[in-house]
Structures are given as C-alpha cells and as structure tokens.
Image 1 (cartoon, rainbow, N blue to C red):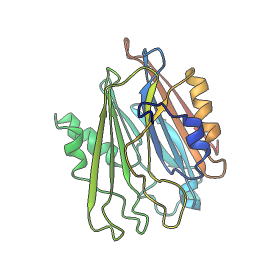
Image 2: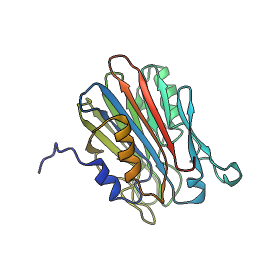
Image 3: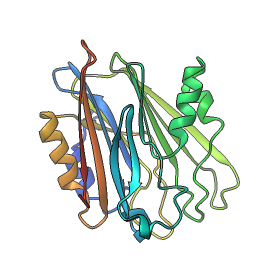
Length: 236
C-alpha cells in the first residue's frame, strides 16, 4: 500500500453522486501557485436554488430565484474571504467566525472551538473549513457530530506543508444516503494537475450533473500574491 499516493480527483468525484460540499487545497505541479476549489451540491429545491456571487474579498452564496428561497440560515453565507494574503474557505458562516478571530491574532483552531456541526438532524452536516497561508501551506478542519443524536461535537484539524502537485480534498458526506453519512478519516490526498482552466473543467465535469450547483476555483502566484479566479454556476 502506497500511503503517499496522490489519488485521482476526477475519479473520486465521478464515483460519488453526493459528496455534498467540498474543499480542495493544494499546489500546482510546478509548485509556483496555490490552488483552491470549493463546490456546493444540493438535493432539495432550497439547496439547489443558489449561485456564487463575487465579493471584493471573496464570494457569497445568493438565491438564484429569491421567490423560492425558504430557510436561508444554512445555505446563504460567505464561503470565501481573503484576509491579507491568506484565504479562508468554508461551507458555512464559520467563515466570518474564523476571520474575526484571525483579525484579533487568535488561531484558526480557537475560532472553530466556538462552533459545531450544522443543526440539521438526523444528517448533522459537518462544518468543513480551510485556511490557506501565503506560502502555500494550509489547514483543513471538520466539525462533526460525535453520535447519531447530535449530543456532542468532535473536532479535527489537519495541517499540511503544501507540496508541489499535491492537494487535499475534504467533503461533508461519504456518499448519498438517508440520513447522509458524514465524511470519515483524513482529507483525501489528491493530484493537482493541469492549468487553472483544465483543473476547473476536471472538477466541474466530474460532479454529479443532477446535484452540482456551483464551483469556485482560485490559483494564486506564491511569489507575487496575484490571484486568478473563476466561478461556474449551474443556473447562470
């Protein structure tokens, strides 16, 4: 068994009809750029009624059709916020919690100790978060229920140095189900390949066509800090 194998991200996505919301952080094959991808999927009409919208410091989610928006509490948030030359990426409003703590000089982990998984039993959707540093190193976190009743929260943080051609993929669910099974284990080690356009196509084209909603991708030059971004919305 090769524990350092970089798995095929396209194959992982294509084999899973519902990974839910997902974060990929890593570096390009030449080691010159950091890579970020964040996608959302949905099964209900309310979850599917979303688009990504650009903001000065990142992106936010917005109702595609405001008339169909039911409960906004878990689906409308800022998934991505830039803080200096760092970047916060999450699947919920914990983005703002992390930003507020970092601005006070307090660590990522401390911010997430004030949060827990989503109150959507029986799924108890995990909160997943990433923090990309200017040098290309990164952290990934998952907050998930410690039991089927949602009585307590288990918190896991993983820290990676940022290696050329290597990324880590963290998503909310193992697969589709009822209730939907929560992601297990360490973030999946994946290969980062191709140009920004090729990588974007790889992710988008291998997400389940019925359930995928939106995708955000960002490549950042580690020497200059210059970033390139793209957004794909199913309903635009």
